Image 1 (tube, one colour):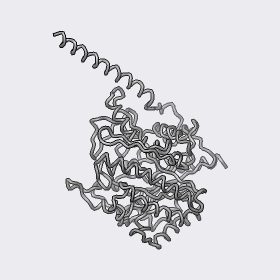
Image 2 (cartoon, rainbow, N blue to C red; image 1 turned 30 degrees about the vertical axis):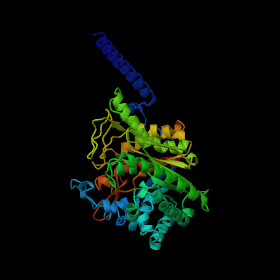
Image 3 (cartoon, rainbow, N blue to C red; image 1 turned 120 degrees about the vertical axis):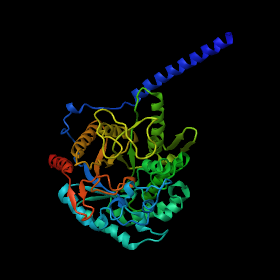
Image 4 (cartoon, rainbow, N blue to C red; image 1 turned 90 degrees about the vertical axis):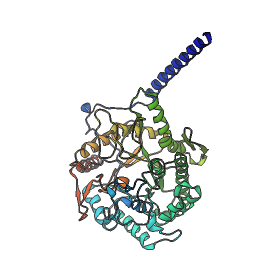
Length: 478
């Protein structure tokens, strides 16, 4: 009996000790990772201030707008089905003509100049067009992109090319793409070719667009090609993407004109916030998720160390001293935070959790401009200039929230600048309605609505707030 009483007392003691530890840990986490929420009824969202030489732009990606891309990993993915026989793309959509930007880019550039008043255009170079077979380059496609660069420069719009925006040739995909370090040399070769061709026509160069989403959607959630669900392989892909960025950065810098170029990585940021801020389990999932999605990438650039840890499955720790600071700027793509619960769905269609006051967008996340402020202030730790390479909203419901979204997010950016974030530019996502990857044609991010039959572009009413803010900024600094 005495032994039993002792064991019971010991068990109670350790349970209480664990409970106390959990409470202390949660209190510390709540303090270290506050979930900022502003009272918008007390905020003047017209109170904006941006630096004199601030860059205003808009952005696209080749596969999403060009049309008739038939030789890359996404063109094949669009034709495939999952294990349950469902099409990979929502509603069975195909990119097809997309927005026919490949043929209509001159008209679109004229709109950027005459209607939007932007200073810059971020777009991607479609690898599968330029190098349709390994080591074989299509001179007509190289010439086509020269035409885009030249048309932009003639319009007074600075080009910002992206070398990898989710797509690559089928032959590279068949090799295992970025899952294998030995394959990186193919991307290095393509990147060097692009810089040799176009380096004199662009100051800012983006290496990879969003390593986090590219890897997690393709190798963890399985909703992007190659459709894998394996967290060990996910770690390998993330590591190789960062090696790839570093290799491209070093190679461009070694080329003639490379020292004058500004070469950067584009990082998507989601804050992982616990749905129940009192729950140790919710906090644990959030910190693991943040470590994989955000810190693995930020730590690589900040400390020169790649850290990846998925408990019980995979752990990678490798030092890359030459990676510390190996980005001339950091590109930020920001949309929202993610409220995390262990009960959340792990397969599409995803159902987002939201806080009171947040507004659901057409994508599975809510508006959260305060998180934009949080992301910009977080990136100060990299000690590099920040360029917002994407920010926008999918809003097909009569353009219901676009104007308010634009004004609130730009207010949040203005506040971050006032508080010391070195933000040099802002690119709205996206110029026109596009093929939105696994969501197909249903998501309407565009400043311009596109008629899918005629390809006619129409500036949305909600987009005019963006035009007005640009015009006001330029007037203020005349």
